[in-house]
Length: 423
Image (tube, rainbow, N blue to C red):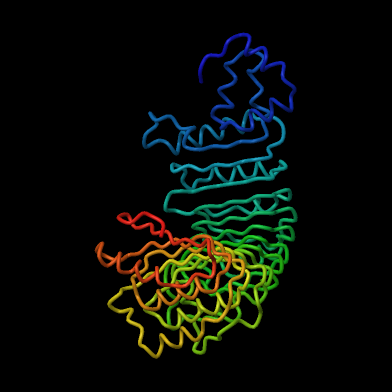
């Protein structure tokens, strides 16, 4: 921390307490503690700051391999001297390991009115969360990374919790379902690389934002009537023998008000059924943005994508990431005709389309052609091909130039490194 002039010190010291608190709340705990050297008046101001945030910045570079021990001592020292309520407690460090001191910190904090809590264990061994965490009755935001969770029998839910995030967390199906359903104010749920659940049923009428990323989990969305945004990313395909209730006809059945939908990785594949309908039973009139990965080796997956598009007449943005092997993605003429016959809607509000990693296949061209011909308000179509050779890329874009455009202002933008221009 740089030296501060006497006049500046005096000006800072004369600021109202609420302004000083706001300034200190924007600093890391390391810098807040260091304000004690500014003057005698500032020596003990840090001990009443309600926001405690610890990160790798708190650990001197000289600590080296002893970074964990140093961090534990710093946290212990701050909590020992702290006076007043603790509203925010965040500790996220690449050095932090599972240790008994963490439980002591949580026990101390359980006697405070903590509203925001984050614990990140970055080392391989995950930390068992003690029961006292579930007595934080004022929690609004909770993030746990690298932990193991078992709910105590007496747990009645977090009545104030609005956002919940788990990453690399181990827990059971029942624990997750119970936790989500007993938080009546929960608006945001983020699950990344969680271990344990194979089938989860999520039910919470207040939930607005949902993110699930990691290994495939069979998901049942139930009573999510307020959901406006869902982001799914599956890092692997569903095993043929794995129990699966999720499919194209029921994944969105309880989220008719959804506005943004992301399905990346292998997730679209998990929605495939034997007889893919042309449209879903319900129309998703509120859906404005959709993004999905599409495996062009799988005709059923293509039909699922078409079904989603046909059921979303008010889309404004569409993003499609093509993936697959061109050698294995030669769609039979009969199947291609089936896909073309399935396309059947007008995108009266569509403005931006982004298609990445195109292989130059006939179906891709048909999809581009259909969107251009049925999007009267389209402004921009971004095309990023994965075609090798400048000649092949040029031939591909020459075909695009022949397609009819319903929108007179629509432009096709090539993001190929060699052809970065608008057509």
